[in-house]
Image (cartoon, rainbow, N blue to C red):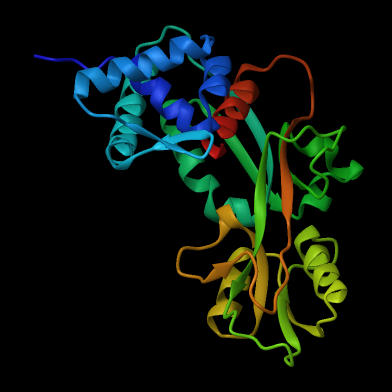
Length: 281
């Protein structure tokens, strides 16, 4: 009977999540050759190649894509068993601030997995615009803040990942149209980026609907009130999106930071930060 080693599965999942063998090695405390050896070990055991070359990068092939969700399930069960019988239980309370679009789209599955592994950690989550989350008056409200940055080289708030801004909704617009925008309130960097891009392209626009909540924006888009702007990762599956069209200009990328408000050691806060960083990447 063959057994699949969980360290090889973890190497596979980490390579995919962080986008490379070297970065995976840093997180796993392994050298890049050691990570490659784990992948080779897994391929030999399964009798299948799992990666293919795409430009300068190694990406999953069809077999690797099939294995990835199964590997995640095995690792989740492995971690849950270890946590269940661990003598050192993780406890505490973490106050997390996140942009509303992340709260509605990406975070539920991540937070659900965290809570199942660490049931004795209490999470208090509040969603706002990034500008409000970072306002000095709110600093004492949060232990961790996930925030979007317009600058990709933000020195105060180091970027741990980037995401592309895309147009979302019915994008069948002509150059003669006045673009109807469905956006978050003033202060939203997506709104600012879209308006600047349209102005620079000489395209007329108007704001027809304002709502800070992703569910409200989604309802307006389904009602064909206009189009909006989101990060690619947070676009609801049922909505059409594109980086640009023959009329709509490209919006570029934004940076995403995860900021720990207090630098003193807190195991629950540090574990959640590690969890979110790995899963989002």
